[in-house]
Image (cartoon, rainbow, N blue to C red):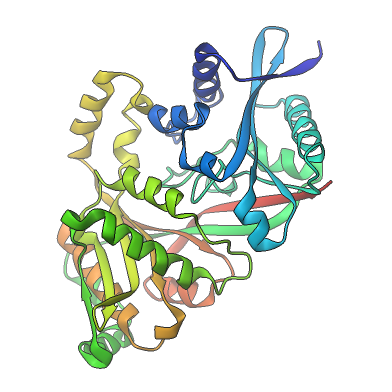
Length: 377
C-alpha cells in the first residue's frame, strides 16, 4: 500500500500528530514526552518562530494508519545570516524499522523545499532556537536532560542511508558527584586562583538575576548570547522573540541560585545558566496533556536529584578577564549546596576545545551525542 503525505489541519489531526510519538517510544524507558502545550503552539502556528519563519506539518499515512510525522520549514533570518537557501525538517518520527516511510517523508520535504527555490535540506530542527537539534547517535540507554531530545536509534541510520551528510555534532557530558565537599576539591586549581584574582578587577562583578525585572534581564542576556556565540562559524543570531519564548518556558523552573550574570561597570558581558533537571519529573507528567498531569509533575519535582549546566556565554571582548572562572566557581558551589547526585553539561560542540578540556579535568564524560544533517537538492 503506498505511503501518502497529508497536511495537519484539524484539531484531531494535531492531537494525532503529537500522540504518534507515544507509539514509537512505548517500549523505550528513556523517552520523555514533549510538553503538549508547547507543541500545540507550534501546530497552531502561534509559536514565536512563525513571526519570522514559515512552516507546515504533515502526517505520513499507509491507508488510514499514521506511520510517520514531519515538519517542513524555512528560517528566513538564518538563511540570510548564513547566506544559505536551506529548508528545514523537524518534528520527525517514524515507526521503528519503517525506512520506506522515512524515505517518503524526506522525498516530500525535499520537493517542498525545491518548490520554494531552496537548494538544501537541513535537520532535524523543530524549528527554532534550541529545539530538538540533531538525531541521537550515541547514548540510547540514558535519559535526556532538560532541553535535550531523545530520538529512536533508527533515525540517524535512516538519514545516512537516504544520503544526508553530517552538518554539526554536539555532545552532552555527565559529572557524577560525591555529594560532599570533595566535589569542590576536584575543580582545577587554576579556576579558583583566576576567580580570586578577577574579583573586582576591571570593574567586574558577578550577580544572580533580578527576577522582578524579568523582561529587562532577558533582553540583556539575549544580546550577550548573540554576541558571545557570533565567533562560531555556523552560528546564526537567535531572534529576540524566540529567546523570549524560550526564557518564558523556563521562568517557572529557573532557580536564581543557578544563574549568574557577569558585569563590568554595571553592563552585562556574560552569563552562566544552570537548571534543575526537570526531565526527571517530566517522565511522570504525560506531556502535561491533562490537568491532573500538573499534579503529578508537582509531586515529582520534589524528587529531582540532578542539575543541568546549559551554557556559559561571554562577550569575546571580555575574554581573559577571569569572569568566566568566577561563574564556574559559583556554579560549582551552588550545585554542591543543592545536593545533586550528578550534573549534565549540554550541549557543546565536539570541536569546542576549551569547554571539552575543562570538563575532562573535572572527570566529566560524554554520555550522549547528537548529529545534525544536510542534503543538497
